[in-house]
Length: 342
Image 1 (cartoon, one colour):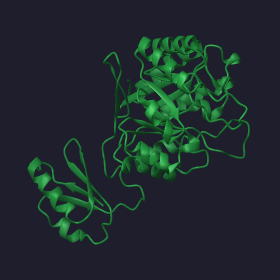
Image 2 (cartoon, one colour; image 1 turned 180 degrees about the horizontal axis):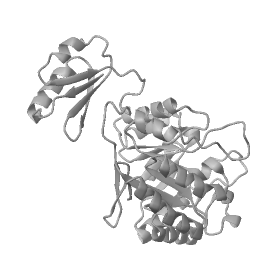
Image 3 (cartoon, one colour; image 1 turned 45 degrees about the horizontal axis):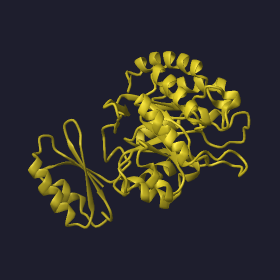
């Protein structure tokens, strides 16, 4: 249930009204927009009389939420959520709320020289965040599994040199403690419905980049976000990275229609991963441009200084030169969408 309060309601009146609502055995989540306060009731609200609430002198509107996701619902939070990350150089980089966040870097960290070189290149081209895999979930047990904690240390060195906040994928609950210095924790497609992991991430206050599962619906993605948010962590970034289809030409099928749907249903920022979606280097620029045109709040793109020799996903990685050319074009698309690079 969502309760919209009248414009001009005083803070002490809002607090008193919230206290009265809590006596009804529901949790109350408060969202302050530009002109109004919106209260979201989470819990068993079936016994609450809507007529009684509508009669209250502070209440403008009462809305029953039909979707199973509550906190991720735009009804609970009418304004777009913006995720802010402060770098070690004090620069604030953002995703959402009119800010385009570009995350770029290698699929997997291979050496300190490799990740630092790529970090310098993508920063110069305008990327606001550095991505890099230290722990790699692979389909084959014989494929390169990442450098683990050593890879995280290399990412942190690149962060110190460039000031770029880092994004890296976490695979298990046991790894959470070693991700203390990672700025944005990525939950991969295979872990989107690892509910025990999502619950634990709800207790931390780091932004979570949640990738859509390869066979998951939009509603299932939002429900996965709900697990994190229900634990108290509302800093969730949704990522469309392609879904599985009968067509095998591309690695996955990029569902760009999910972007406007998610933006309509939820207040959370939405980014797109054209690298994993297509699996083909020459398709990445086209899909990146299409994602911005569809209303995405950012992109996560794989960049490697020598894709032919990459230990992981070289076939879908742009060279630094290709990434730089793409960024020049994306600035024009961003201007059309009235968004700015963070």
